[in-house]
Every structure is written in C-alpha cells, then in structure tokens.
Image (cartoon, rainbow, N blue to C red):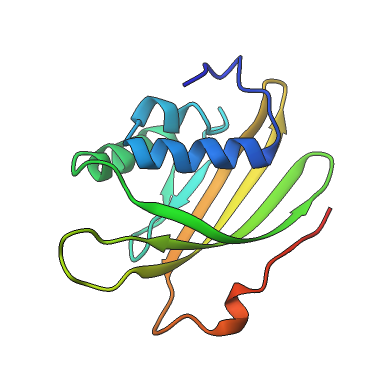
Length: 143
C-alpha cells in the first residue's frame, strides 16, 4: 500500500483502495486512507459512532482479526466539488461457508481534499433491512 504522501489520487481511487484494504484485511493500508484530522468518524453497521484515529484503528483491527472482509461496492451515487466528495454506495457483504444469504449494506463515504490528496473523513454503514428494493440499484454519478 502506498504511503499517505504517495497516495494523491482521486476520491474514486481512494475508495477503490478502501475496498482493496478491506478485502486483504490490511490495517495499515486502511488507516493510510483516512484524513489526519482527529475529527474523523466511522460508524460500522449496528455499532456506536467512533471518533478519532485510535478508536477507528482499534475497530478495524478487531474486524480484521477475523480475516479479510468480502464486501463489494455495487452501486455508487457521488457528488463532488473542489474539496469534498460524498459517495453513497450499496455494498454486498458476501458470507462464505455459512449457507446464509449475502447482506446488502448502505454506506456513505465522505472524502476531503488535503495537501496530500483525497482522504476519508467519514464512513457510515448500516445493514439494509429486508430485501434490497430494485430502485436501490439505480446508479448515477454527479460531478
């Protein structure tokens, strides 16, 4: 994973690196994507709000102790301006080996442009109740 100083791509590239870090259970790679600001926020499905690097790192460390996470972004609705990007995503959490159905997660990722490139400032995810409605799968990207 590139260092923070080397990761100067777009918000879309940071998001791709986020899902890549999830798939590899790469804690350092994951945390390199977050803004240096201590006001960063992460809310995992059904969990309390976490603020700051220490709390967020600890939560991802606990999640990654169980191994990689099979979450794939399915649909993206994005709004961007010069300094912020907000991505609303439908994620598919693939359960392996337990015979249960895949779960759909509604996630919002907020990115800010920093001197070192785009960084995550907020990740908020919740499990979609019931079967995902068909209109959830309409994708649009606004720039």
